[in-house]
Image 1 (spheres, helix red, strand yellow):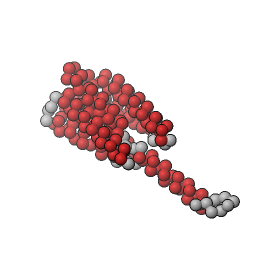
Image 2: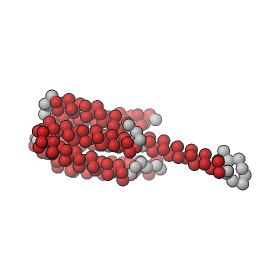
Image 3: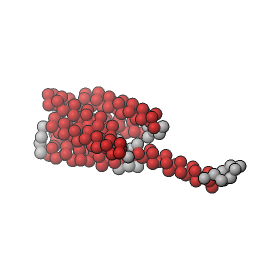
Image 4: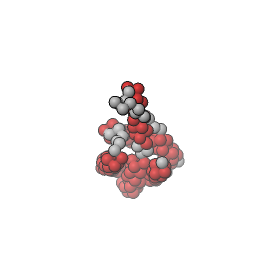
Amino acid sequence: MLSDPVGPSSREAAEALGEIARLRGRTRRSLGRPWFPLTCFGAVTMLSAPLVAAAGTIALIPVWLAGGAAGMLLTRRYYRRRGQRLGVTGLGWRLGAAAAAMIVAGLVAGVVGGVAGGQAAGLLAPVMIVVAGYLALGWLQHNLVPSLAVIPAAALAAVLILHHLAPWVVELAFGAAMATAGVGLRATEVRQ
């Protein structure tokens, strides 16, 4: 690549910098397979099902305040360790801010939806916030994988809600579908 014994030409330097930028972009996009958050928050959602069965949908508020914060901390720790191991990090604080906004918006949407439209709306509104949040994450990462991975889980939840199944069944199914999507993304990440 560098043929001049005195030093690289400006053209060669520009080519090298361009190649580094392309490689960095590809590496950062490869970090965009959000298997861990899907699996982690899917697990929190599944764990909320017994509490919802026992106490009703009002139990979702403390579950998501505590479980959402714990999930965010676990996700942050996972990506920080992964970044140290690979030497490349993703979007950092922007992803954390987006995750926090999703949790808060989901709680608010659930409460407002429940008050305004009943139990079905209170369950469906947070699911739609999750889909919108993953669309936003996909936009931030220039990668549609996050939003495509969560859509089947949201569709399943919507069908169950429209069929008037118990809220705990919806939570369990939605969480299991999210976790399954996360495991599937992890499998594709390992193969690459």
